[in-house]
Image 1: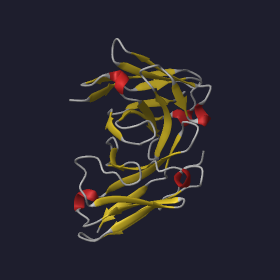
Image 2: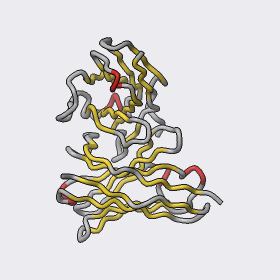
Image 3: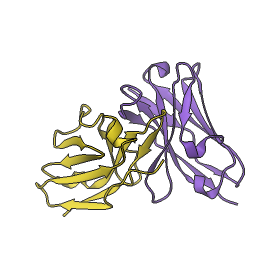
Length: 110
Length: 121
């Protein structure tokens, strides 16, 4: 199972929006509405920001939103804040009771 | 409150096995699936496997099949992940993470702090 493809980095100024892509195949991202996104600060455990493509857990700011089109999922962070600077990973169900993570994207707030 | 407390760091020699524990509190262990995720130093997240604490069924990443065993002890609210025939490529922080919603959801709502497993001769 190959990792989902994410851009290594993304950036934006405070208040701007940034969108991170997550590209897989029809066997994972494209085949199921089970894409999730995680935020991770250095040395810390990840935190779920989006699950099932676009559902936001309680406590996650509505600045975070998720979507999917074909084999590519996206996470958009609107109104960027300094605290959004972190690593972001997507994940997808990949069939046969397995899951796969993305390669990760480092978001920098300029 | 929900907590997942993992066992301490381990140093193992190549070819050895390691068993990492994850003790759950604040909820009923058997009501939620538990994932294992690992992260090699400076690298990304890698899915390791998932266990259903209710019946004990588990599923793992294809690359780890044959080397990984996931178990649970409902009397102590603890899940375990054992990895055998260790190589340096298994050096990583291993996290347990509860699945808050359905099996497929990816809603990993609570995470342990991670257990560093170092494989070195």
